[in-house]
Image (cartoon, rainbow, N blue to C red; front, side):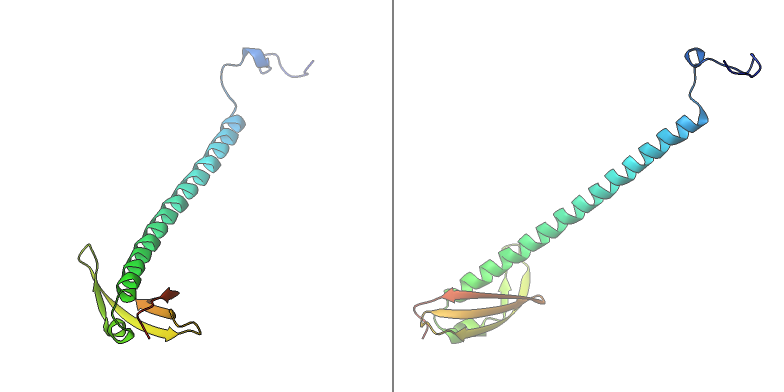
Length: 127
């Protein structure tokens, strides 16, 4: 039995409100959860934007590689200095083509808008 004055002793089941400590702890927990969710959402949106940009650049590279691969000769392919994309955007290209040990495989380097792509392409018509 508590040894305090009866008017200050309140039994737990008769209380109708939360104590200040309980309210502060609950606010702290909800604040941490809100900050965590906000950071996660921001990171998700940044990741989505980065993937969209990467996909756009990959599409541009694929189109450029296809045009280069279907050129009549290596000299014609190297002369390509710009590319008009389907959306009307014109991008500049720097192309380097190096033969490999196999006669129909070539090492292709394309620099497009400051981004360098490297791959192997096959073309039986180039010599």
